[in-house]
Structures are given as C-alpha cells and as structure tokens.
Image 1 (cartoon, rainbow, N blue to C red):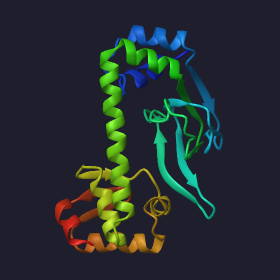
Image 2: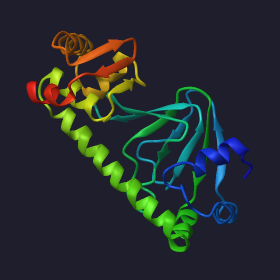
Image 3: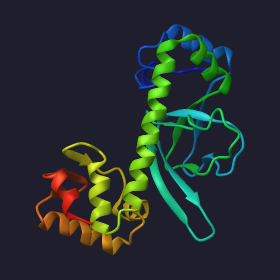
Image 4: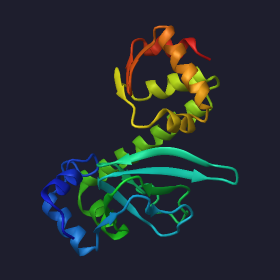
Amino acid sequence: MLLTKKESEKIFHSPIFRGVNITNAKNVFLRQGCLAVDFEDGDVILAQNEAARKAGIFLSGRAVVTTADDSKNALLRFFEAGDFFGIANLFTNEDYVSSIRAKKKCRVFFFTEEAIRELLETDKTFLYNYLGFLSGRICYLNCKIRYLTAGSAERRLALYLSSFQKDTIELDASLSSLSELLDIGRASLYRAFDTLIADGYIEKTGRTIRLLAPDAMIRDYQ
C-alpha cells in the first residue's frame, strides 16, 4: 500500500476518517490488505450485480454511476476525488444495483471489509463518523426520491437545486446528464431552467447557478 502525502490527506481529511488515529488506521490498512488501484478511462470500477464486497474512496479522477434495467441505462451521479462508494453495501450479502465506470484516468483506494470492521471495533471516532456518513446517504436517497417523484419538470429541477442547500451551485454534470438524472427530456429541462430564470428564482451563468429565493421556488412549483 503506497500512498502519496496528498493521497493520505485525501483519505484522512474526509468525513469518515476525520479525527481518527492516523497511525493506527494506516497500520490497519496495511495489515488488512487495503490497496490503491489505477483505472483507465472507460474501465469498470464496480459492476452492477457484482457480489464481491467492495468499498473505496476516489483519490483522483472522475467516474460515472449508472443503473440499468431492460429499457435503458439511467445516470445516477458522478464521483470525483474524495468521494466514497460501497460503504453501505460492505456488510450485506446484496449485489450492487449500480455500476461505476471511469470517465477519465482514476486512482481508487479500496478498503477491505476486515479493515473497516477492525476500525469500527477499535476507534470510536471512526464508528461515529461511519454512522454519520450512512445517515447522510439515507438523506441523499430520500432527496433523490423526492425530486424524481416531484411532478413537473420545474418542480423536479427546483427540488434538485435546493437539495444542495447552497446559494451558489456549480453543476458537475452536463445538461444532458442532468436530464437523465432527473428523468426528464432535455427540451423540458431547458424550458424548466428558462422558467426558473424568468420567474426570478435563479440566475444561471454557464454551469454556475445562483438561487435567489429557494423557499418560494419550492412552494410555487407543483
């Protein structure tokens, strides 16, 4: 397990590892077989329906998460440096329901189940961080369900933008990808942006979105 100083900082400044005993954690990683792996653009990092238990953090690069059914491939989100995946699946026997594929060259640090289990048992700070992270994922999924079942394209977009809980947002996806994420057509998404701008709820410059009245925006679209 060879990590650069920058890569170590990426791990230990992350929410799950913030405040843990770094020396102890590194020893656990080494003892329990954790590895950093490089992926090229297009490589599958984690496959849908894969049974192996994998969890990791992106040290560099970018990846896309998709899930497939009989009719289409649905984009779920993007991963970038500092993002975790697989944490919620690590202690279950359920197969993964989505796929992760590198969008450019990526480096990923994989945690073994044994490493996470040992840290949970020996470091109370890590235990609380881990529980907090899982709670955050549940909130994220609840928000996603909320805007996917929201009704009009304007309301879906309004709920999505407000879910960031920021006044200024930098979109990390193209409008084409965002239309897939919200399950609305691109033309409908463009019209929804135009409506929110015309109604005075947002300002948009390129991928930068400024929310002017998020509460009113949510209230006024159904």
